[in-house]
Length: 425
Image (tube, rainbow, N blue to C red; front, top):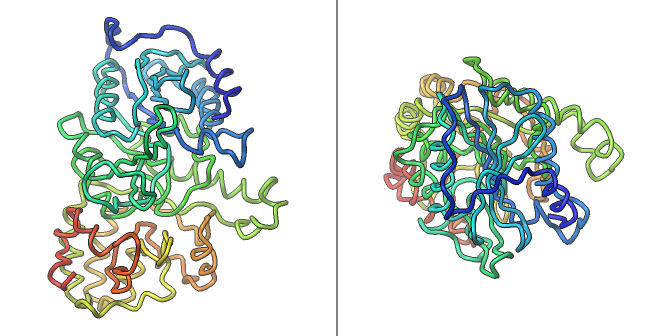
């Protein structure tokens, strides 16, 4: 984060700081809904040498301050903030009526991607802000399902999942949190109404299945999202919506904002971004209570077309959402519709539609990967084949990938649920 911006935010923050060794604040009375925004920002989202005057974290905090005027007394917005700056320790703030009040400050630096600290922060919020409903917003970097063993990732950029922490403030290595660890960290806590992933590539079926017991819904994008992330100044009321289709409100607000933004400056007058005009961000919502049924249906439908190692499916021209050295994270619905016999697909689709009650298609999105951008024109033109949830399909050439996809997928419960080993993978 630009240190000047950090200082400005610091002035805005009311000084009701409570150190770890101070008495715990008196828990608030039970309210309608508490939303925790977990901001893992010790990375280029806060401070980027290429853009020294920009800070997405500072901008999003300002949006939250603006949007907080739209909240009621029964709605608590809490943010955990880990930014950049050795004099700016990780802390928790309550945001209301245009102000951010610091309610807890940690004595020392740590990796926000540490699952132990992650659980501690979530539990502290639940304990001190009792509520009828709790929800979690994951803010930061992410790259879909974990592609390393079930441990905190090393400094290698190849091993990642959520919450990149560069370790700048305590002179340590870069670390990420695997989704398997995230799920374990949340075990035994009250189930979230939803987890909203304001980060890239989170809507993959492998992560959703891993998190199926810790939240009712998972909301986000299977693809990359813009650096500025969600438009919190207009999204906050939707995050607290009591509608039965609140997930639709969240997706619509996010999608419509960027659909409009991409047609106006600075996007419309930048030729390198002209491919975004008329598009937004692919989004979806998953009903996690239906994930076991979807796993069973997928297990059955794979029997009708899945290939054995070393044979592979031909996935040419199928939309994919991640591509570092090889295309991966293919659109789940597109692949199964392409290969499953009609009757089998119809049966599977029924389970899929129950598990994914809402999606918004954008066949192009802002990407840093030329491999993805160069394939947009080859993706299907028919919107109905897109499901906006990705799935891993083994490929022989993945054995040559630095990510070792075919091996690392085995860390996931989904791998066993759909029985990839039955096909030699």
